[in-house]
Length: 305
Picture (tube, rainbow, N blue to C red):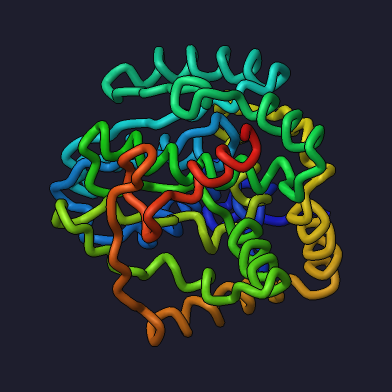
């Protein structure tokens, strides 16, 4: 059954929880409006770093911030790429990054490997952890190092804010994961105000795609023919997050409102639970941490000791 777009053309695409269908052009315009209105005004006049993996979410975010840079009054954009050094992904990402460098020649793209930042690649750390029988999953190791690396590179480039491509599914999965691990307070970390002892402020993170579904993002990238990284991480099957994502996908088919309800509830509670956290210099790597030794240094020391 065909559906007309609001402009009269054939409607091929729709957003979750809506009954309207859109042609490719109208869908793109509607999508962009949804994302742009979720970008905070406080980034105006500042330097924004984009965490770029090469996947559909971060590439979409890069494109939109670049396209609307003048309207959003962003002073400067920098793309930060962390290379975990997983062979299959590394080869494909190199091709994607080369295309992005060519297309976004006015954006500084900084790429650092885990070995450059931490002394070891992710495969090396995973292998060592497995050989010692430690409890760390590959995603647990990668997650800690990625957060640390993004912060470090944003500080190195003197960025004021960090844009993350977390989607609706990512946010809902993280919320449930934190609850299942017995650390629900981590769901409120986005609004923590950090108070370093030797720096006025650390780069704050914002997530313009946090209420945008992956299906809508995928449709947007297809319409606009963006080069994206499609390879699946070799360690994905070992992740609890992967099982949660499968569970949420099944639930969403029965009730598409579930993911929105989960994320909206937490965001509402966040307004009441914002807090201040003191940070200090890590004794090992000198980066910022709420503990004397940062989580990245602790996990590496435990694995490689």
